[in-house]
Length: 368
Image (cartoon, rainbow, N blue to C red; front, side, top):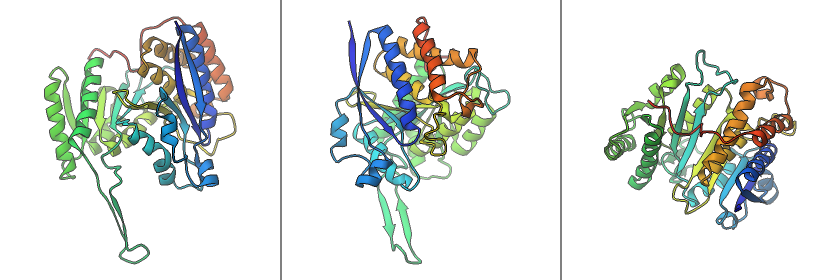
C-alpha cells in the first residue's frame, strides 16, 4: 500500500534554492523503500518576490498551503531587504497562523564532525524546545516621535498561560520519552514579571511529570554551561528569544550551523508543520554549488518522523551520519571541497543501500 503526501516547498533565497532539491531527492529515495510517495508544490515566496511585487507572499498565501501535509523551507533573507521585512512577511505568519508553537532543534556532535570545543564528542546529544509564537517576539508595541530627539520604541513581551503550558508539556513529554532530564531557561532575577510567571508554570508542569528530573538555570549562566559542558544536557526549554539564541549557539557547538535542522511543529496536526535548516540564505556562497545540504536533509528526516514514519526518518539520519563517519567527503563549511551535488550523491547511495536501523537522533534516549 502506498501512502501519498503533499508537501509545500518554499525554496526562498540564496542557498535555500540549492539545498531543497537534495532533501527532495532523499525523501523520494527513502519513500520508495517504505511505500511513501511525495507530491510537491513549489512556491516562489522570497525576497526576490518582495522586490518585484512588494510582498514576500500573496495575500492568499496561507490558504494555498493550509491543506498540505507539511512545509519544507529552504532559507529566507537577502541583502537589500531588511530582515524584519522577510521574517514578518513569511516565516512568522506561517508559524502563527498554523499554530506552530514548538520550535524543535536537535543538537548532536556527529562522528566525523569535530566540535570547536575541545573534548566535545558524540556524548553531546540534546534538544532545544523553543516557544515559537509569542513571548518576546510579539507584535505589541510601536514607535513614537520618529525623527525627533526624543524618539522612542516600545516592544511588549507576551506570555499567556495556555501558550507557556503547551510548550512546557511538549518539553516534559520529550524529556520523559528520552529518559533524560529537563532544564528551563529563565532570567527571573532580572525580568520581574514574565520570567517569574514562566518559572511558576514550569513548577506546575513538573508536578504533572513527576518522573522527569528538572531544574532551572538563568540564561546567562546556561549559555556558559552549554559551552563548557554541553554533554550534561538532554532537553532545554526556553521562551522565544532565549530558545532562539540558545539553539543557534548550540548548533555551533555541534560543529557547523550548516548541519542544523529545525522543526516548527503544530503537535496537534490541525495545521501543517514546517521544517527548515537553520543556516540561512548565505549570500556569500549562493550560486556556487557548495552549500551543505545536511541541514535540509536532516529537517526532511524530522518531517518523516512527524508524519508518522520513524523508521524512514532513522534511515535518512543513519545514511548521512554514516557518510560523515566513514568517508572524508565534506562540503566547504566542514573543511572540504565537495560540491552540494557530490555530497548528496553519497547520501543517496547510503539511503538506497541501507538497512532498517534503530531510531537515533531524537530518539529514544540516552538512559540517564
